[in-house]
Length: 402
Image (cartoon, rainbow, N blue to C red; front, top):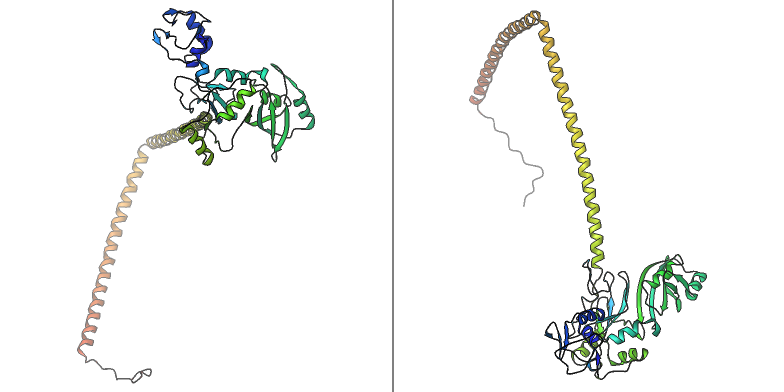
């Protein structure tokens, strides 16, 4: 069975179908030694080369159909590559040999929940196409109560920028206070469609969680940031919903089957997402703290400058006062010097007389002390020469005989 060349190259993972068409048109692809043309078909056993290098391929019907379910956390984007280096949903998926994972549907960076990945491009295309009307179910947390009139508006249809949209079903599932949880179902996958329908009625969505895509329901044992591979029964139900025939060999075998059974019995711990958003919050907090520190530094510099100015003013005032005193002293002339000399002479004579008088008093005091000391010594000598009198023996009244 043959297949289009650009489709085979895209499935191998060399690029999108449109990019592969450009590569083929540039003459870089050859089949059995001949330069290939856009739209050419290839069969099993043909030799396929791109830029002279041989490419291993399989016809799509011969490839085992695989489907993964992934619990997307907040903060990851639905893209293979991001110029801002944000984490993507493809970072934690298992590698697949000689093939690539195709994402079914998208979720914005702030939304969480169920994502499907498959290696069958046709299955992914049919699951996403609006003509097949595959249901997507969401659990939505809304700030504020949804009145009956608003509910009717959203279920009957509202007009958005890209056309009319509506909820196929709308029901309340719980919540207290200002935050209420609702369950809604849509049959399209337009960009931020659920959020925009609520915003058209003046309501703000604070959290969005996808719980079902088609016939696949987000299992309870699957934790945030983890993936699980579907078995044959679930894959066949998906292909039946989009009118695709099942393939032989589809399903889990060996280690893959044991891993899924083990996860059902003992779920893996949730993996925290949102690292990019948390880093943005930390960067903003760091910037605010740096601005606050700069403001404090500027205010401290202002205070230091003010203190330095005050110190300089005080020093200038002291210098001015000293200069005034010096000028005043100089203006006094000889009278100032004579008065100063007289004061020095009088104070010298007075101090000299006081020292003499003080020295005379000190001599008298020393004589008195010498006389008193001799008198005390003679009294002690007389007491030592007299015999010591013994005290009479007295029995203590409290003494007890044994």
